[in-house]
Length: 109
Image 1 (cartoon, rainbow, N blue to C red):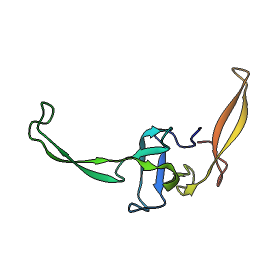
Image 2 (image 1 turned 60 degrees about the horizontal axis):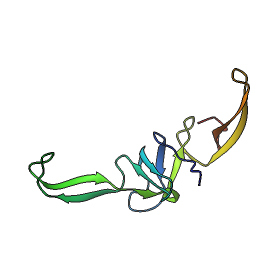
Image 3 (image 1 turned 30 degrees about the vertical axis):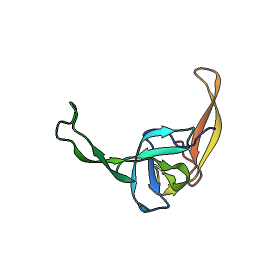
């Protein structure tokens, strides 16, 4: 399955406990249809002492969130938008290219 959200995209959460929060996509899991967003869906992880973390204790980290609960932020208007695709002919390489476009402003993402 081809996802419309990619790494480093700015997104807004539209459902759940973190509704209204924005952040950058850190990681994408296409098979599970989940993404990790910076500062969203923070969970507490209990860890035992190790060489990396000799103290151990409770660590806060981002957990994956389902892709249906986020929307892309339009780079032009800074509002949430749906994502479409457009076929563009590249003159330099003389090949067709599929690009993502914002449904609100029509601008390339």
